[in-house]
Image (cartoon, rainbow, N blue to C red; front, side):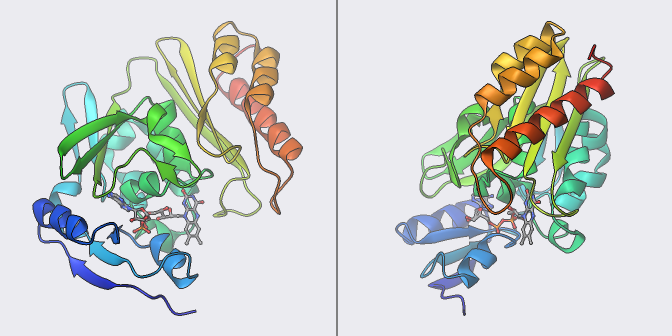
Length: 276
Ligand SMILES: Cc1cc2nc3c(=O)[nH]c(=O)nc-3n(C[C@H](O)[C@H](O)[C@H](O)COP(=O)(O)OP(=O)(O)OC[C@H]3O[C@@H](n4cnc5c(N)ncnc54)[C@H](O)[C@@H]3O)c2cc1C
């Protein structure tokens, strides 16, 4: 099938991008790496959109330090996230997650902002954002605002972004002394979307666990976190299973996904030297 688009415009700067989206009256679509959007257009899942190409907005590239936080521009490609020295030093979870995404060709074009905005429930970066307690930065016709990652993901492919808004970056707390980051997933083949995955951060002795591929959005598993904080790994696995509401599809049944998530949590706990 051939993609049917309503037009293409390359934004010159942020104000221009916002104007283009506003003028499109609901038919404007931000184009970043195109790795999900172009596939959707080719499948006829979306048509008639004005594609607003933001790849020329240099403000959305790069990583900068803001006191005890790191601001990662929306246009940082997955391959850049994997190798950036500031990310490796201050947010190793994202550096670990990037190579798990798809294949090299996709990682060379797909962007972190696109991944967050697309909100695929099996995607790695949204779960990392939740586990890290990150904040999503948005700019739109009404100015700038920030949304906590824990509030950002609403449903499958649905976020808190309003019409005409552009995701400009993700703000992540820098790692503190003794902080640990781990992401593990189960997929049929390397590069496939995860059937189930967990991103875990231990900060100030407290665990944050975000599950992905196991429900409509990345899920912060609060009861499992409390059990792990108390050193009760089996209790954490059982709480995780209770919290998840996975789909059954061609990749695996809901029961299989729950089981995988439990296995991953056990493995992570072992790796982190918890009592198992
Ligand atoms: C074969 C294949 C396998 C894949 N496997 C994985 C995987 O294992 N894990 C994974 O996480 N992803 C996977 N992906 C998706 C890939 O990571 C995409 O790059 C990512 O989901 C979207 O990023 P993008 O920059 O390409 O966004 P685009 O495709 O350009 O856009 C995606 C959506 O987000 C919106 N958007 C993009 N950027 C912004 C922004 N800054 N502000 C507002 N809206 C925006 C677009 O309008 C569109 O709706 C896979 C893709 C393919 C084709």
